[in-house]
Length: 350
Ligand code: NAD
Ligand code: DAU
Image 1: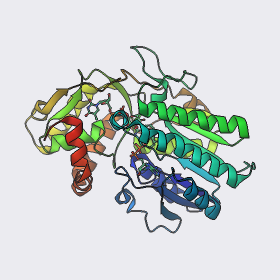
Image 2: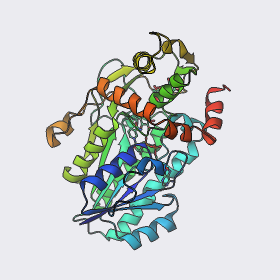
Image 3: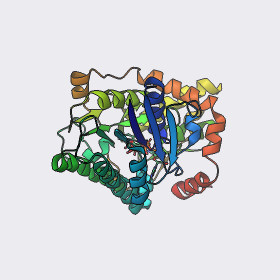
Image 4: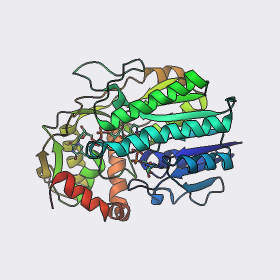
């Protein structure tokens, strides 16, 4: 019997983690703690919202009083912490919001966990979900390993790097049982369409320009979100205390090649003439401080815990496109209102 608080469970990755834990561990109680920012959406969890082992709590991890009370009331055995401001472009516009949620919010959770567990960490665990962006950028060669030095460049990655340091500090200073994983770019269902893949799918579908930053030469290492959720499950249950694992797909794509591939898939799915969607590709002003290349070496996770990705990128991308085309209402709901305003400001288009 375990009670686990999963933060950010209404977001993209968090919703997949919540779903997996609710379904696979009926003996656990899963509390989804989420502020429901623009990125949080309870529609991501309708299929499990009535499960007897699931509970949703709306709250802000920056609000220490609230977090302390929640921990005192619920007495959780573990935290899986995903809540964050997660979009690099938004961090360039509003860095302080990223400091508050990603740094202060994480420290609030660490403090509340410390108070609740009172130094007794047997059967307790604080799992912090982080990103490969903390390692900075790669040139043409090499990969990030768990021992690569931190070198963040965006306000987002700087805030995630800071939160990682705090989690390690609570392990080293107070003996808290912590684990951290640093994952590469995820894609899949319920991905908010401000990020490259869902934004491109949505724009191609609506015959709108598909914005590619700079020359489209930046490289990302893409992993199917359900494989990330499975890796979190394995690491949560099996990793030794104080350890870090990199998670990645061994799946590097130049942005422009990825977008061209997506256009080919969309032409087929939408019954369009070959090459029609690719005409929507529009090169726009580059992101400030744009990291050139990310690539994760996930050998440690494979060797220690036996995790490898379950599907190829081609399969995953096709599944993802199918999901967005079958879930038009979800897409329309999340792209109305505030999203329209964000989109106009970010891309200076109508
Ligand atoms: P997301 O933006 O889709 O979801 C974030 C969730 O956190 C939302 O539900 C939001 O409402 C909630 N949240 C934000 N601020 C909060 C606050 N102050 N209090 C409580 N809840 C709050 O993010 P995501 O893409 O699912 O990323 C989840 C985590 O995984 C983040 O920590 C991110 O850094 C990390 N990560 C993401 C990726 C990726 O490719 N998306 C890759 C590696 C790591
Ligand atoms: O690497 C893990 C990270 O991946 C996570 O920690 C972040 O939370 C997540 O948002 C993601 O960050 P990126 O900045 O890599 O993802 P994004 O989808 O914003 O951009 C992917 C690449 O595509 C990047 O090189 C920028 C480029 N891009 C992005 C957008 C939104 C474009 O060319 N055009 C766009 O419109």
